[in-house]
Image 1 (cartoon, rainbow, N blue to C red):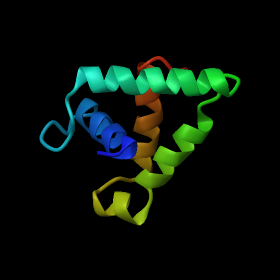
Image 2 (image 1 turned 180 degrees about the vertical axis):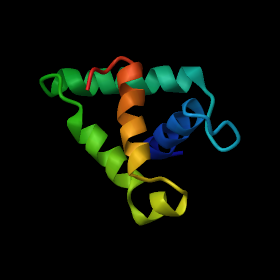
Image 3 (image 1 turned 90 degrees about the horizontal axis):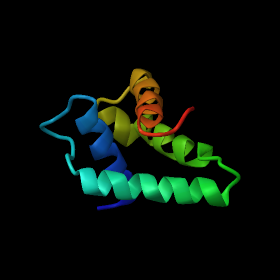
Length: 86
């Protein structure tokens, strides 16, 4: 599973898609450790990561899976709820 698939699955589960999402607190913690490390290497910025995932949500594949602009807003809120003040 790619990091993108993991992120989307964790986000989906946490925002109510318990049937199709991924519930794995260890993987979630590890992913956020990677984000903290990335931010540490890039002057505290994780905006490239946010852009990558938000862009995917609005890509043809994301839209086929039912994601919309509202999901991008929820994604940013989800990141904020998980230790990032965006």
